[in-house]
Length: 173
Image (cartoon, rainbow, N blue to C red):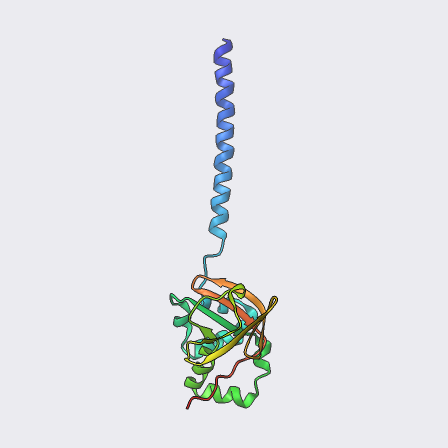
């Protein structure tokens, strides 16, 4: 009788371990289900409170689908505070002229994924066709006269860097 009792104890412990393993596995799967799905740049803009002004303008300019596209893109995203510094007259003009708005917004977008660590002091072409000056000194990254205040917000199709100034493209000739 001793051997069946030992076998019974072994099986009981094995069932307990298996049950605990299944519970742990279910918890892990449940945790995965609650994790957020990867986001595109457009989704990132829409879900970042400090970029709500930019998100509204991207929508108004019809650029949401572009920023949901394959990319890769680097978006230098002006914060809500940056837009407060733009004169009301300029914002009104952009609202009346969607092509000008699109031109301003695309001046903030590079057709490559550039993390802050990748930035070199150089000129790069934006998707609106104009060049911007990128600079890096230590951990500080600038684009034209704007400073990156939050770098490397990763998205499935690129990266977002939040900046403190709205950039205005040069006048096209």
